[in-house]
Image (tube, rainbow, N blue to C red; front, side):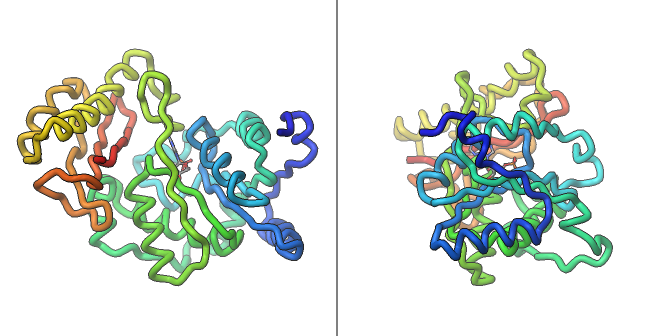
Length: 290
Ligand code: AMP
């Protein structure tokens, strides 16, 4: 394994589409496979796990860092979303990514007002996170398709943390016949169980404690399911009491993992997903029943 100092010589930061395309063209001419990890930066061990997975399956790995304005609503945190390129670079180096792609907004959306955009089917976007975040998934879908077209990777890596996003991206790739293989990667958590998120940096110690009740509640669902309880309504009533009283719950339900339709009877393979606002910080988490 290269240490970060040796690898430092090999990582490049590229901001122009034509330059990243040239780089990838060069790799492909050498028959090297390309893995792609799209991110919005403020990298943490969750992102690192995606890079590591990509590196284990592909010869070269591109990490993109782009805070995509099209997926933020007017009252969301676009302008103060954490930006920390030096730390991100270090994480990319340590996990042996080969290139960081950091396009500007102008590079990605030169004709901003007149953008051809992807429209995700209502059946997938108008539920869970899509209810509070109108337009979010169309913004995500559009930028992901653009990035996949620019990078043209063999495989692209996404976290199960954003379960709805992963389902939507797999669907878009099927529907639009995009060739990259989409690989879902498990949720990485901090030692206390909190799902790693760039937004966790907004949490005070006190807020973090409240946030932890999300995962505790999901674990409780799993525990009740394993003990033989199958009726969703009963399970939700019994587990809701584990949520901290001082959080604002957005959704908490059990869904089919392909259609995102709510299910009434618990069984293996269902998605238990939760979203809440904790002292002004919107957090999501989920588990899949085994
Ligand atoms: P973001 O920078 O938040 O857009 O996330 C970039 C990618 O990292 C997405 O595919 C996320 O699902 C994934 N990701 C974010 N947090 C985690 C986590 N805790 N564990 C695994 N993957 C994650």
